[in-house]
Image (cartoon, rainbow, N blue to C red):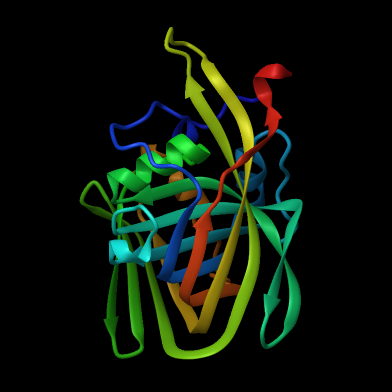
Length: 259
């Protein structure tokens, strides 16, 4: 089995309260962008059992939960994540305006959160490679700037023109995947190494957004710059609006240590 990239290795649990799954998040304000990425990078970074979708998309989600009453058992938080779209794991989504559509599965390769409770929950329960980071939104008229800050530095900056008038309602499930790894206490190897599938039900009140720029400015040694959009920027998939989701209980679909 190919070695897992350094930035997605599971390096142990942070200290925090143990939170059960599933969890409900209501009316998070989200900007989700599917953009064209380097197909060679996408193929290289997927674990055994997953192949990149032919569209060569990375899905980037930048969203905020501003009050604990929007959740079932979590602190307020903001997050940004990056996912590679994968082949042969589509889910079905219903558009009120356009009928049923299929959405490719998504494998997490980066996930930043500013809540210790939320970070502990997603790492322990789902194996998501969660790291500290905060997502801020700055809005002036119809211009939105969404920024991911890590260690005091802005590492992703997204600029978009937005309109808050609802144009559609989307509902259904999204199939997410994570490489869940737990280190052996003796060191040197994993105690658990498995591919986990997390089907996430959602409802989104969709508005209009047009993305004009996405800038990646990660430190060179982080490895995340490889997921930046290719030039010229192409964003065929943009979702902006209020979204309600659950973080479901994942299921193991492949045990790498048993192979």
